Image (cartoon, rainbow, N blue to C red; front, side, top):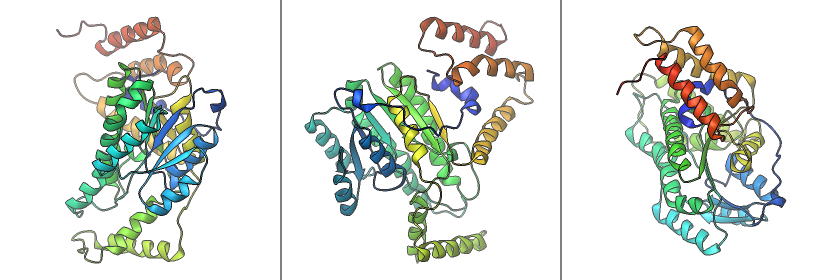
Length: 355
Protein backbone atom coordinates (compact mmCIF):
# COMPACT_ATOMS: atom_id res chain seq x y z
CA UNK A 1 0.00 0.00 0.00
CA UNK A 2 1.16 3.54 -0.69
CA UNK A 3 1.50 5.23 2.66
CA UNK A 4 -0.12 8.58 3.17
CA UNK A 5 3.05 10.58 3.67
CA UNK A 6 4.50 9.39 0.37
CA UNK A 7 1.27 9.67 -1.57
CA UNK A 8 0.96 13.32 -0.60
CA UNK A 9 3.89 14.02 -2.94
CA UNK A 10 2.02 12.52 -5.87
CA UNK A 11 -1.62 13.04 -4.97
CA UNK A 12 -2.33 14.06 -8.55
CA UNK A 13 -1.67 10.50 -9.74
CA UNK A 14 -4.80 9.21 -8.05
CA UNK A 15 -7.20 7.96 -10.71
CA UNK A 16 -10.97 8.25 -10.85
CA UNK A 17 -12.77 5.21 -9.53
CA UNK A 18 -16.23 4.26 -10.72
CA UNK A 19 -16.29 0.51 -10.81
CA UNK A 20 -18.92 -2.09 -9.98
CA UNK A 21 -18.64 -4.16 -6.84
CA UNK A 22 -16.11 -6.95 -7.02
CA UNK A 23 -16.26 -7.93 -3.38
CA UNK A 24 -17.98 -11.21 -2.56
CA UNK A 25 -19.29 -10.86 0.97
CA UNK A 26 -20.82 -14.34 0.91
CA UNK A 27 -17.33 -15.76 1.24
CA UNK A 28 -16.64 -13.77 4.39
CA UNK A 29 -17.08 -15.69 7.65
CA UNK A 30 -18.12 -14.50 10.10
CA UNK A 31 -20.25 -11.65 8.80
CA UNK A 32 -18.31 -8.41 9.01
CA UNK A 33 -19.97 -5.37 10.55
CA UNK A 34 -19.51 -1.74 9.59
CA UNK A 35 -20.68 1.52 11.15
CA UNK A 36 -21.76 4.30 8.79
CA UNK A 37 -22.50 7.76 10.17
CA UNK A 38 -24.98 10.04 8.44
CA UNK A 39 -26.73 7.07 6.83
CA UNK A 40 -30.21 8.58 6.49
CA UNK A 41 -29.74 10.07 3.01
CA UNK A 42 -27.29 10.59 0.16
CA UNK A 43 -23.95 8.80 0.15
CA UNK A 44 -24.47 7.29 3.60
CA UNK A 45 -27.84 5.74 2.74
CA UNK A 46 -26.61 4.52 -0.64
CA UNK A 47 -23.53 2.91 0.91
CA UNK A 48 -25.54 1.31 3.72
CA UNK A 49 -27.93 -0.29 1.24
CA UNK A 50 -25.09 -1.48 -1.00
CA UNK A 51 -23.09 -3.10 1.81
CA UNK A 52 -26.19 -4.67 3.34
CA UNK A 53 -27.19 -6.13 -0.03
CA UNK A 54 -23.68 -7.54 -0.39
CA UNK A 55 -24.12 -9.45 2.86
CA UNK A 56 -22.31 -7.23 5.33
CA UNK A 57 -23.97 -6.03 8.52
CA UNK A 58 -24.41 -2.27 8.76
CA UNK A 59 -24.90 -0.16 11.86
CA UNK A 60 -26.52 2.86 10.21
CA UNK A 61 -26.26 6.11 12.14
CA UNK A 62 -29.11 8.62 11.88
CA UNK A 63 -30.83 11.23 14.02
CA UNK A 64 -34.50 11.46 13.04
CA UNK A 65 -37.01 8.82 14.23
CA UNK A 66 -38.48 8.42 10.74
CA UNK A 67 -35.04 7.73 9.27
CA UNK A 68 -34.20 5.26 12.02
CA UNK A 69 -37.45 3.42 11.39
CA UNK A 70 -36.89 3.28 7.63
CA UNK A 71 -33.34 1.97 8.02
CA UNK A 72 -34.47 -0.76 10.38
CA UNK A 73 -36.75 -2.12 7.65
CA UNK A 74 -33.73 -3.09 5.52
CA UNK A 75 -32.17 -6.54 5.88
CA UNK A 76 -28.69 -6.56 7.43
CA UNK A 77 -29.12 -3.01 8.75
CA UNK A 78 -29.56 -1.93 12.35
CA UNK A 79 -30.36 1.75 12.79
CA UNK A 80 -28.41 3.53 15.51
CA UNK A 81 -29.35 6.89 16.95
CA UNK A 82 -26.15 8.81 16.37
CA UNK A 83 -25.55 12.53 16.33
CA UNK A 84 -21.79 12.90 15.84
CA UNK A 85 -21.79 16.15 17.84
CA UNK A 86 -23.13 14.40 20.96
CA UNK A 87 -20.69 12.33 22.96
CA UNK A 88 -23.50 10.65 24.94
CA UNK A 89 -25.04 9.25 21.75
CA UNK A 90 -21.64 8.13 20.48
CA UNK A 91 -20.93 6.34 23.77
CA UNK A 92 -24.35 4.69 23.66
CA UNK A 93 -23.68 3.53 20.09
CA UNK A 94 -20.36 1.96 21.15
CA UNK A 95 -22.13 0.15 23.98
CA UNK A 96 -24.79 -1.12 21.57
CA UNK A 97 -22.26 -2.44 19.07
CA UNK A 98 -20.34 -4.22 21.84
CA UNK A 99 -23.55 -5.70 23.21
CA UNK A 100 -24.55 -7.02 19.78
CA UNK A 101 -21.37 -9.10 19.79
CA UNK A 102 -20.51 -8.96 16.08
CA UNK A 103 -17.41 -6.88 16.61
CA UNK A 104 -16.72 -4.03 14.22
CA UNK A 105 -14.65 -4.37 11.07
CA UNK A 106 -14.98 -0.83 9.79
CA UNK A 107 -16.03 2.76 10.35
CA UNK A 108 -17.29 5.00 7.56
CA UNK A 109 -17.19 8.59 8.80
CA UNK A 110 -19.73 10.04 6.39
CA UNK A 111 -21.84 12.51 8.40
CA UNK A 112 -21.28 16.04 7.15
CA UNK A 113 -22.81 19.46 6.65
CA UNK A 114 -22.19 22.34 4.27
CA UNK A 115 -22.09 26.07 4.88
CA UNK A 116 -21.42 28.51 2.04
CA UNK A 117 -20.44 32.10 2.84
CA UNK A 118 -17.60 34.52 2.12
CA UNK A 119 -15.03 34.05 4.85
CA UNK A 120 -14.98 37.69 5.96
CA UNK A 121 -18.79 37.78 6.13
CA UNK A 122 -19.41 34.48 7.91
CA UNK A 123 -20.30 34.35 11.58
CA UNK A 124 -18.01 32.38 13.88
CA UNK A 125 -21.00 30.23 14.87
CA UNK A 126 -21.24 28.97 11.27
CA UNK A 127 -17.60 27.88 11.29
CA UNK A 128 -18.02 26.23 14.68
CA UNK A 129 -21.11 24.35 13.48
CA UNK A 130 -19.32 23.17 10.34
CA UNK A 131 -16.22 21.94 12.14
CA UNK A 132 -18.24 20.39 14.97
CA UNK A 133 -19.78 17.96 12.48
CA UNK A 134 -17.23 17.61 9.69
CA UNK A 135 -14.04 17.51 11.75
CA UNK A 136 -14.73 17.04 15.45
CA UNK A 137 -17.44 14.52 14.61
CA UNK A 138 -14.94 12.42 12.69
CA UNK A 139 -12.53 12.68 15.60
CA UNK A 140 -15.15 11.76 18.23
CA UNK A 141 -16.49 8.73 16.36
CA UNK A 142 -13.05 7.45 15.37
CA UNK A 143 -11.68 7.75 18.89
CA UNK A 144 -14.71 6.09 20.47
CA UNK A 145 -14.91 3.13 18.06
CA UNK A 146 -11.16 2.69 17.51
CA UNK A 147 -10.76 -0.07 20.13
CA UNK A 148 -13.36 -2.22 18.35
CA UNK A 149 -11.68 -1.72 14.97
CA UNK A 150 -8.25 -2.41 16.45
CA UNK A 151 -9.58 -5.66 17.91
CA UNK A 152 -10.67 -6.79 14.44
CA UNK A 153 -7.63 -5.29 12.65
CA UNK A 154 -10.16 -3.63 10.40
CA UNK A 155 -10.44 -0.38 8.47
CA UNK A 156 -11.49 3.24 8.80
CA UNK A 157 -12.84 5.19 5.83
CA UNK A 158 -13.33 8.95 6.01
CA UNK A 159 -15.60 10.65 3.48
CA UNK A 160 -13.76 13.78 2.45
CA UNK A 161 -14.44 15.69 -0.78
CA UNK A 162 -12.74 17.15 -3.81
CA UNK A 163 -13.09 20.30 -1.69
CA UNK A 164 -10.30 18.79 0.38
CA UNK A 165 -8.08 19.95 -2.51
CA UNK A 166 -10.13 22.73 -4.08
CA UNK A 167 -11.13 26.05 -2.52
CA UNK A 168 -13.15 29.05 -3.61
CA UNK A 169 -16.62 29.99 -4.77
CA UNK A 170 -17.79 30.73 -1.25
CA UNK A 171 -16.82 27.24 -0.12
CA UNK A 172 -13.88 28.41 1.98
CA UNK A 173 -15.19 27.16 5.32
CA UNK A 174 -16.37 23.84 3.88
CA UNK A 175 -13.06 23.39 2.06
CA UNK A 176 -11.18 24.14 5.27
CA UNK A 177 -13.10 21.39 7.05
CA UNK A 178 -12.35 18.89 4.29
CA UNK A 179 -8.68 19.88 4.13
CA UNK A 180 -8.67 19.07 7.85
CA UNK A 181 -10.23 15.65 7.13
CA UNK A 182 -7.46 14.99 4.60
CA UNK A 183 -4.74 15.79 7.13
CA UNK A 184 -6.53 13.83 9.84
CA UNK A 185 -6.80 10.81 7.54
CA UNK A 186 -3.16 10.83 6.49
CA UNK A 187 -1.91 11.20 10.06
CA UNK A 188 -4.29 8.56 11.38
CA UNK A 189 -3.22 6.16 8.62
CA UNK A 190 0.40 6.32 9.70
CA UNK A 191 -0.49 5.85 13.36
CA UNK A 192 -2.94 3.00 12.83
CA UNK A 193 -0.64 1.11 10.48
CA UNK A 194 1.34 0.09 13.56
CA UNK A 195 -1.86 -1.49 14.92
CA UNK A 196 -2.71 -3.30 11.65
CA UNK A 197 -5.65 -0.99 10.92
CA UNK A 198 -5.93 0.52 7.44
CA UNK A 199 -7.24 4.07 6.95
CA UNK A 200 -8.39 5.66 3.69
CA UNK A 201 -10.16 8.76 2.44
CA UNK A 202 -12.83 8.95 -0.25
CA UNK A 203 -12.92 12.23 -2.21
CA UNK A 204 -16.35 12.46 -3.94
CA UNK A 205 -17.25 15.09 -6.47
CA UNK A 206 -20.71 16.52 -7.07
CA UNK A 207 -23.07 13.60 -6.68
CA UNK A 208 -26.73 13.70 -5.74
CA UNK A 209 -27.12 14.50 -2.07
CA UNK A 210 -29.41 16.37 0.29
CA UNK A 211 -26.50 18.32 1.78
CA UNK A 212 -27.20 21.29 -0.49
CA UNK A 213 -30.94 21.27 0.12
CA UNK A 214 -30.37 21.07 3.88
CA UNK A 215 -28.00 24.02 3.63
CA UNK A 216 -30.66 26.00 1.75
CA UNK A 217 -33.38 25.22 4.29
CA UNK A 218 -31.08 26.28 7.11
CA UNK A 219 -30.19 29.53 5.30
CA UNK A 220 -33.83 30.41 4.58
CA UNK A 221 -34.87 29.63 8.16
CA UNK A 222 -32.34 32.13 9.51
CA UNK A 223 -34.62 35.16 9.28
CA UNK A 224 -32.38 37.14 11.64
CA UNK A 225 -29.33 36.87 9.38
CA UNK A 226 -27.56 40.17 8.94
CA UNK A 227 -26.90 41.57 5.45
CA UNK A 228 -23.37 41.14 4.18
CA UNK A 229 -21.14 44.20 4.16
CA UNK A 230 -19.18 43.44 0.99
CA UNK A 231 -21.00 40.58 -0.74
CA UNK A 232 -24.71 41.25 -0.14
CA UNK A 233 -25.58 40.88 -3.82
CA UNK A 234 -24.05 37.41 -3.79
CA UNK A 235 -26.02 36.51 -0.65
CA UNK A 236 -29.28 37.56 -2.30
CA UNK A 237 -28.46 35.44 -5.35
CA UNK A 238 -27.84 32.43 -3.11
CA UNK A 239 -31.11 33.02 -1.27
CA UNK A 240 -33.02 33.25 -4.56
CA UNK A 241 -31.57 29.95 -5.78
CA UNK A 242 -32.37 28.34 -2.45
CA UNK A 243 -36.01 29.50 -2.62
CA UNK A 244 -36.33 28.06 -6.11
CA UNK A 245 -34.83 24.76 -5.04
CA UNK A 246 -36.95 24.38 -1.92
CA UNK A 247 -40.15 25.38 -3.73
CA UNK A 248 -39.40 22.87 -6.48
CA UNK A 249 -38.89 20.16 -3.87
CA UNK A 250 -35.61 19.10 -5.46
CA UNK A 251 -33.86 16.85 -2.98
CA UNK A 252 -31.29 14.88 -4.94
CA UNK A 253 -29.97 16.74 -7.95
CA UNK A 254 -27.27 15.11 -10.02
CA UNK A 255 -25.81 11.64 -10.44
CA UNK A 256 -26.71 9.03 -7.79
CA UNK A 257 -23.66 8.25 -5.61
CA UNK A 258 -23.39 4.58 -6.63
CA UNK A 259 -19.73 5.01 -7.61
CA UNK A 260 -18.94 6.51 -4.20
CA UNK A 261 -20.49 3.51 -2.47
CA UNK A 262 -18.45 1.22 -4.71
CA UNK A 263 -15.31 3.04 -3.62
CA UNK A 264 -16.32 2.73 0.02
CA UNK A 265 -16.76 -1.01 -0.40
CA UNK A 266 -13.35 -1.33 -2.03
CA UNK A 267 -11.66 0.74 0.67
CA UNK A 268 -13.27 -1.44 3.34
CA UNK A 269 -12.78 -4.87 1.84
CA UNK A 270 -10.49 -5.14 -1.18
CA UNK A 271 -7.18 -6.92 -0.65
CA UNK A 272 -4.97 -4.06 -1.80
CA UNK A 273 -6.88 -0.84 -1.06
CA UNK A 274 -5.72 2.65 -1.94
CA UNK A 275 -5.08 5.43 0.55
CA UNK A 276 -7.24 7.86 -1.44
CA UNK A 277 -10.17 7.31 -3.82
CA UNK A 278 -11.07 10.20 -6.08
CA UNK A 279 -14.62 9.54 -7.32
CA UNK A 280 -16.32 12.07 -9.59
CA UNK A 281 -19.25 11.92 -12.02
CA UNK A 282 -17.58 14.09 -14.67
CA UNK A 283 -14.10 14.16 -16.17
CA UNK A 284 -13.86 17.91 -15.62
CA UNK A 285 -14.15 17.44 -11.84
CA UNK A 286 -11.18 15.09 -11.92
CA UNK A 287 -9.38 17.69 -14.02
CA UNK A 288 -10.08 20.51 -11.56
CA UNK A 289 -8.88 18.44 -8.61
CA UNK A 290 -5.75 16.95 -10.13
CA UNK A 291 -4.74 20.22 -11.79
CA UNK A 292 -5.12 22.09 -8.49
CA UNK A 293 -3.03 19.51 -6.64
CA UNK A 294 -0.36 19.67 -9.33
CA UNK A 295 -0.46 23.48 -9.36
CA UNK A 296 0.17 23.57 -5.60
CA UNK A 297 3.02 21.06 -5.83
CA UNK A 298 4.70 23.03 -8.60
CA UNK A 299 4.16 26.35 -6.82
CA UNK A 300 5.58 24.87 -3.63
CA UNK A 301 8.63 23.69 -5.54
CA UNK A 302 9.27 26.86 -7.52
CA UNK A 303 11.89 29.54 -7.01
CA UNK A 304 13.61 28.75 -3.75
CA UNK A 305 17.03 27.49 -2.72
CA UNK A 306 15.97 23.86 -2.58
CA UNK A 307 13.78 23.54 -5.68
CA UNK A 308 13.86 20.35 -7.74
CA UNK A 309 14.24 20.40 -11.49
CA UNK A 310 11.52 19.31 -13.89
CA UNK A 311 13.51 16.16 -14.68
CA UNK A 312 13.87 15.36 -10.99
CA UNK A 313 10.11 15.71 -10.44
CA UNK A 314 9.44 13.42 -13.39
CA UNK A 315 11.94 10.91 -11.99
CA UNK A 316 9.99 10.84 -8.74
CA UNK A 317 6.65 10.47 -10.51
CA UNK A 318 7.99 7.61 -12.64
CA UNK A 319 9.31 5.83 -9.55
CA UNK A 320 5.93 5.91 -7.80
CA UNK A 321 3.71 5.47 -10.83
CA UNK A 322 3.65 1.61 -10.68
CA UNK A 323 2.48 1.78 -7.06
CA UNK A 324 -0.24 4.34 -7.77
CA UNK A 325 -1.36 2.25 -10.75
CA UNK A 326 -1.56 -0.90 -8.62
CA UNK A 327 1.19 -2.68 -10.55
CA UNK A 328 3.40 -2.88 -7.45
CA UNK A 329 2.74 -2.90 -3.72
CA UNK A 330 4.57 -1.63 -0.68
CA UNK A 331 3.45 -4.71 1.25
CA UNK A 332 6.72 -6.40 0.35
CA UNK A 333 9.42 -5.39 2.88
CA UNK A 334 12.20 -5.51 0.29
CA UNK A 335 10.27 -3.27 -2.08
CA UNK A 336 9.40 -0.88 0.72
CA UNK A 337 13.06 -0.62 1.78
CA UNK A 338 14.19 -0.12 -1.81
CA UNK A 339 11.72 2.71 -2.35
CA UNK A 340 12.57 4.34 0.95
CA UNK A 341 16.22 4.33 -0.07
CA UNK A 342 15.33 5.78 -3.47
CA UNK A 343 13.27 8.53 -1.89
CA UNK A 344 16.06 9.40 0.54
CA UNK A 345 18.54 9.68 -2.34
CA UNK A 346 16.08 11.71 -4.40
CA UNK A 347 15.04 14.04 -1.57
CA UNK A 348 18.62 14.87 -0.64
CA UNK A 349 20.04 14.66 -4.19
CA UNK A 350 22.44 12.06 -2.86
CA UNK A 351 23.68 14.27 -0.06
CA UNK A 352 23.88 12.98 3.49
CA UNK A 353 20.84 14.13 5.47
CA UNK A 354 21.52 16.57 8.34
CA UNK A 355 22.11 14.97 11.70
